[in-house]
Image (cartoon, rainbow over all chains, first blue to last red):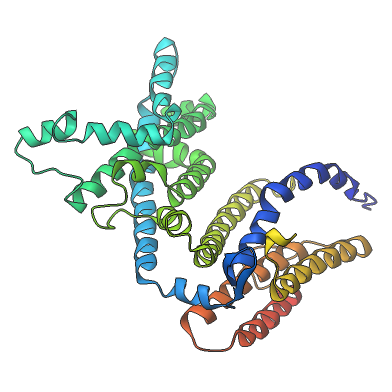
Amino acid sequence: MNNKVLNNRAWLLVLPMLVLVAFSAIIPLMTVVNYSVQDVLGPNARFFTGTEWFHSILNDSALRDAFVRQILFSLTILAIQVPLGIGIALIMPKRGWQASAVLILITLPLLIPWNVVGSIWQIFTRGDIGLMGYGLRELGINYNITRNSGDAWATIILMDVWHWTPLVAMLCYSGLRSIPEAYYQAARIDRASKWAIFRYIQLPKLTNVLVIAVLLRFMHSFMIYAEPFVLTGGGPGSSTTFLSQSLATMAIGQQDLGPSAAFSIIYFLVILLVSWVFYTTIMHMQKDKNPHGGA
Amino acid sequence: MSWMVWTTPTAIFFSSIAAMLAGMTLWEILSPTVERKGFLPISTTRGDRLFIGLLSAAFIHLGVIGFTTLSIWIALALSAVWLLVLMRWG
């Protein structure tokens, strides 16, 4: 006998938020959709173009290259940051003043605004005054991020790893802290090796925070703009031009509002798809663990 | 509203989305959804299936526009059939 009726009236309490979101997101997004099917030249001069912008954006080879570059970038930083973050979390001190000190030190990069991170690395890698640029040059390595696209890539990845691995490490650290001591005692009784403890106790317990870390890092790296823009300006050539920079160039630099609206919608749909897949995965993992609790 | 540069097709598009949401709300009030498992790998509610249907419809349209010379109406028909299949058996 289940006589409980779900009362959906609580949803009315969400209305004020809905109005706010309508003005800040939904109505602007509708406008973008309207722009994407027209050539808007002025208040009274606009022409309906249908799906033309979408066709040209999807077949634009420069944008396709930027898309591939973007995916490559996101996968590369995930492949580095996730294992590195877990490793850092494992060797972080567990208690005492050392734990607090390490936590503060590790959080520092997260507090620096994106533009500033770009500027720091821009100066850091300069051949004449930058510590890293000058140092590498003195060692006889031909390092130049404005000429060599390999150097530019390596530097952007290094910069992102420096800026965001702390986030992964902090998430993993909190995940590790939540494992009850009893698990470790049982492992000691079984004389489990360090690897076995990691593989069968720590890693499974970290799954949830790792999914969140991967989601956050993927989404953010997929929309990265300020850091590479300040560091390399998308160059040399277009070798480090990612999607949001292509979009900004098109919308603000060239004022091509129609094509950039179409591009925005495609970009938005890709992000929506990825977020939904991640969200569903997270919700499912929680449901599998707690079948009666619901998510 | 003129700053939003409305066109007839986009107005029809957004009206149909709004109508779908209103219809779903009404349907939910008349007979609340039960989460179930169909051919999709996850168990879904009615609203989940509508969302999946609309999102895949967007990608079907993009695929047809970008990579074929077929008419956009074919994409629309395909999406509608897919949405119905999804709502019934998904």
